[in-house]
Image (cartoon, rainbow, N blue to C red):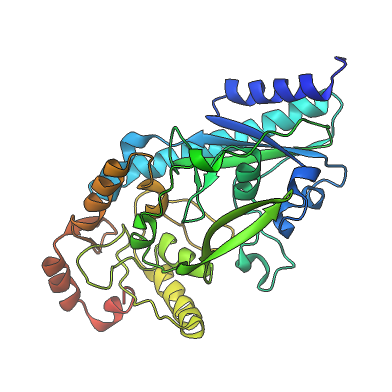
Length: 349
């Protein structure tokens, strides 16, 4: 068996992940994560943990504009699934490689690894380990205003994953603040129909004596309400996500949680759409209907603005009785809703 030093093993795991298709790789350790939130505690998933390898897999940017303009949803959903599976496969392969070399390791899940002990159990969606925090501390990318991780090459259009290990690795440095392209343009907030991001307050966390900031998040289920497809119509009625839902988002959290329960019951009764995937928190398939804050955020400010225009000037989505989705004008959508019987209308608004 190879006699590894922290330096040579660190170089090897970075190269290993890059060769498998990751666009950015970094290393965090117990020391560089010290002082962070609970979801930076590597020993939660592996008592012997000393280090974590964080990495990003890029999404196919050619699918973004057709998705945001509501011309074609499936290429983005399919590519999102591809990137998720690829990231998960890299994490599992790295776990196997490190285990073979004598280091106890644990591949993290890309998503849906939620802590039971949180206030609402898994429904709080508190991850075992936060990929975003690992990525920010290890230099995989930087926090944007939205709280998404931004990368120089692919913007926020990435899927994050990682692997925790007992190996003593050499940590990588965070991205210097001057190299973070986020200019607080606010398009992420303007594209978010859930109002999950606070427009005034920021959250600042400390990891290894270094501060990291992003907009304060409101009730996390607000994001699930929109990205999960329950609703997706902008308050002005002129544009929407790929969701045909039209429930109005209340400001008060108590009213919102009541609406969330009502809308999920309605969601379960809607016709099946094309594609989709199963999620541990739902009894019916979920579909890629939003992700706007992620998909429109690229380093080029002009391109960001063009993507936002595609999102907001291409009408709204309605669902036909056979489950198919159709992009129509706001006026035609109103006509479509008006002729529904009361029971069917209640599935959407």
